[in-house]
Image (tube, helix red, strand yellow):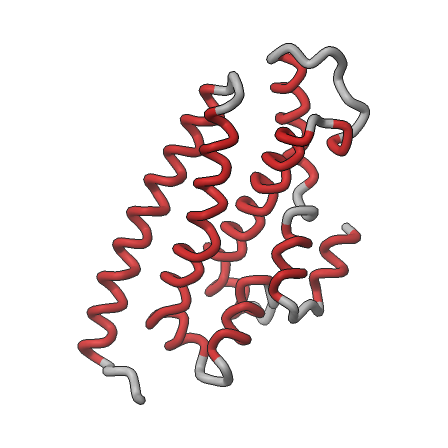
Length: 168
């Protein structure tokens, strides 16, 4: 809850992305269980007690879920006048341009390739080092889905540019 309140008015993108990793503490629960099942001596009292490699995975998993949620809910949140982290990122990146056109023209594709895909690649690398084949399979599936989405976004963007060429 503290992270959600802190995120609400945030305009610094690095801080916004760091806060997004703290919003979904529920990601710690399955990681704590997997850690214990994979030979962890004791079940830590909280996620901060996980070994560093597991803590990094928890942060990236939380960050991915929050940003992916904001990414997919962007149009619905905008229509309901709810601001989310991706909207603030789009507003800043668009530099005063209409964010609806900007999002369709380049924002969604940029966000997916510059922010979501790198997190998934870090997760894949982390899960490959751990005895967590289901987590790795989940990550690889998400990566394939997001890669397909970026191809669709690229095709949609190209069609949009043919209909409405971007102004210089």
